Length: 148
Image (cartoon, rainbow, N blue to C red; front, side):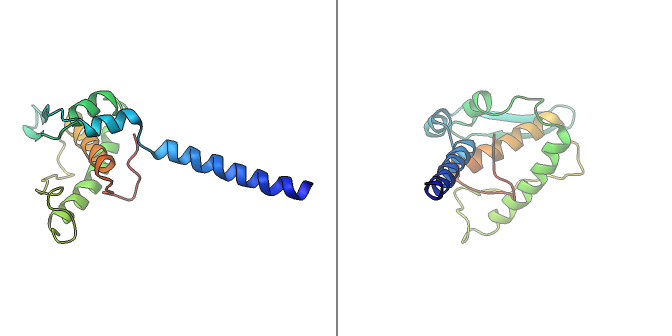
C-alpha cells in the first residue's frame, strides 16, 4: 500500500507545481482582453527636464499600463535602466534582422543611451511597453521572463 501512495503523492505534487507555474507566468483573462482590445490611446513618454520623448500608439497598451502594470514607484530607476538597456539592445538587433524577426513587430530602432539620465517616467513607461510587447506577442527581449 505504501508503495502505491508514494508515486501518487509525487504525481499530485508535480501536477500542483505545474499548475502553480502556469498561473504565475500565464496571462489572465483580464490581460488577454486588453491585448484583444482596439483601444488606441497613445502613450506619450517624455521627461521635460531631459527633453526626450517617445509616443507609443499600440492598441491596448494605454489600458494595460493603467490597469495591469505595476504602479509608478514599484521599481527603482536603476532597475528600469538596467532592464531597458538589455531590452533595447535586443530590440535593435532584431530590427536589423528582418528576415529572422518579424519586421512588422520590430520596425524602428530605439535610440537609448544608458549613460543618459532619461528620468523615471521615461524608463518606467519604456520598460512597461517592453513587458506588454513581450507578453502580447510572445517574445523574449532578454534572459528573464516578462512578468508583471
